[in-house]
Length: 256
Ligand SMILES: [Zn+2]
Image (cartoon, rainbow, N blue to C red; front, side, top):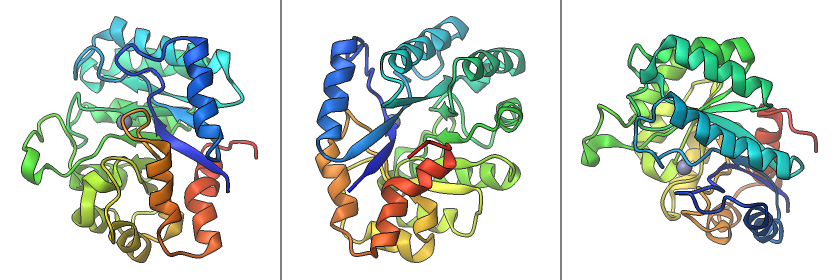
């Protein structure tokens, strides 16, 4: 069994920021079959709307992880779309030069807002997929900053030339899966919350294995639990290989 984890935060509220801690995290996941990790940064350490300097600091910490363990870590850069076109362009350019392979968007704004346009143009220009924090807002009711599956699906439809990763299968739920259905440039990651019986089966039925990627949200969730959500669901060997490894390897052009 081999896996790539597309949704991790090795640096989380300032913990994990040393080469030794990064090595420990990598060793723990490696022992369970995770061959590679996508680092999304310490995205909420300065609150939902970091300023330009804070965004740079978050991304510099991720870049440091990539320098320590380029064999194990791939980085996505965090952005605050609300800072506007110039700030977004500057940071995406800087991060692309540092070797980042995607963009991570958190809860600075809702994905249907106009400030997303420059982000998506930058993503298209550098060929970077966008991982959008997504959670069903029917109970939380913070849609001015969080993106509901409906919003992330709309984003993917508006920008068909950008590949979108809709984060948090559990947080999106059954309704979120139906929102994501039939969108070619969208995949859903399996992070967010503990495994729920039947949900991944429903995603397989409606989205197909080509549109599901394994993610954990490590260190908020454990690798053993998040992996077993995939391993404990009935599917073919081919489907399992795609979800755990193949889809992300192809999406980010990672060498086997
Ligand atoms: Zn996360």
